[in-house]
Length: 562
Image (tube, rainbow, N blue to C red; front, side):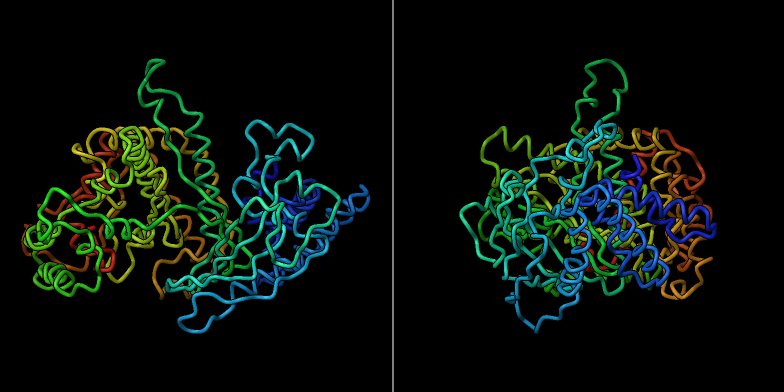
């Protein structure tokens, strides 16, 4: 039971009440001793925290767990906890490594671990998640999946990704768990062997400004939501169609190494939404038509496209006429850059059944992410932060630093609840947002609203850990811890409102800019204080997400025409 509450416990290791802090440390020591291979990844970052207090507490927790294991005669796991320092230091060094400009890969020296790397549980979702219904069992072998492959040695070839943060793609040669559990030693020289079953990939990164603990906590929340979706009941009748909807969030492991460094599970077979749009074409228009290829939409270097959009924005930000800005955005951008994503599913899934399944997966997963994203105020949903599984069509969202409506305080506020742009609507088929998407979004919001208390309790660690920055602007980021906690409580209050049916996403532009295209009486909107029904809330969310008046206000790099 306590293993599933590790995020909440870790947020309380430093507590104003000494007795509480002492009890939390004792519980963490017991959990680490009982499940050393799994709990090590959750607790390890405390030893490398910027807080000296947390360093000291973490050292006591690890030493205490090692003593318990030594008394039990479990020298292998005791040695593994001791060697985890070496592993964490190695990964942190990789995360902070500065590669030379234009280098796409480097060759590193493969470290040798004692005990061997095969004894460490890999930091992936499948290995660290508790098997449903297994918490009452006594053995950790029964609690966690036994079939997960084990890392044997790291691949010396370290790939440097070419995004802005330049994260590193780390690979490890893996062997089946049955091979790893044998007493015989395996080579650790970074060379593949015949017993290998393949490779396991990770992304090791350092955040310049963000905090990876946010990503980790959001994944914890998503895992809880997935369990709620599995246990939900139909609205009415045993064969209710919505009960059969495969509602789930595609999650992956995010393990913090320090506050700003982490190792993330690599999500295979995925590409960004923008890149897929750029590769797609519409075969029903002439080959020389400007509307044929998606590259025209995804090319941010197209000055004509950027300038057209920014001219539309000026009609609002300079001339204060939002209605005209939205009208010109539709005429000069949307009608000139037509969506093509409908054809990607046809071109990528030639079998009719596979095509239908992929499009259904995309629609369902997009609806679930829309619901969850709106509730937690997930921003920065540009087309590179939404990935698509090219084998199943499922959506995968990444980068959760911009939560709790932080996107509203960007220089160009992100004033929409979630991404529902023309190419996404095109992907859903002829019905667009009507039909399956609306049904899945409604069912998702029903489930979230029904389990409001559970979701708020999972978000409690955000309140307990003032080191995580909840401030929305640079001036607020310099405020005291008390103000950070107040900001967190205010954000939790906003989430609580959304789980009651209130659409409380307020557009800050309307306070800065006095519109000249409407009378003051026309601007009145009481939806931010009105508790809507689930259906009413869903319609309001979709209306705001697809509103041209909202889309024309976002940052040009968000590319609202895709």
